Image 1 (cartoon, rainbow, N blue to C red):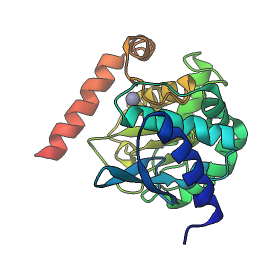
Image 2: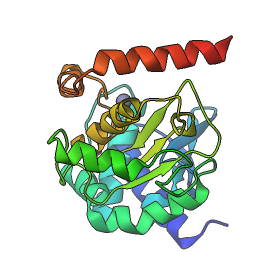
Image 3: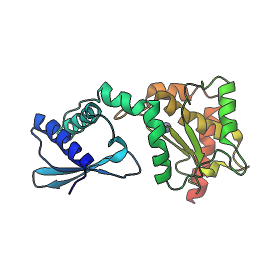
Length: 231
Ligand SMILES: [Zn+2]
């Protein structure tokens, strides 16, 4: 019933599971939008569904990923090995999988030009001021959302290197500086790269974030926007 890819997946996950005395009933690749794993329990056995973004990765990469997955499922805290991390952080992986991620994403305009504001202009100012460097935003994709969200004004998918900025900031009522601050925040995540199972907003991140002149004002403005919308 399974495809060839699923058969390979099952062989590798079963091999990893045996190491931890874990029982896997089945495993398949799924076309999730986000990179993720879900599972169901059938008695003492589990059935896994794994993002198809890594369905064409070499055996050692896939095994490394599955080994860490099963170790964490069984209460251990193994980190990912270099095989997996290097594969998914490579430009080739990002360039080949990002179009699929973008296609599966709803609510993105696929453009940096808004009606009133331009994310490209923000990036230029951030690079010019030296807050960001080219390497931070290398091989990255920026876009507005279609619908304006107010709770989440920006988000970053560090795996596919996609930054999404809420179109609620594409307004003459929002100072350009506030947009720059949000673009800066999300770009800092890109600069740090893909860091699975690690804290996004740790002390080092906050220190970098607070290099933005007037960050406190910007945060206040964003807070105010959120509160006004909640009413
Ligand atoms: Zn963040």
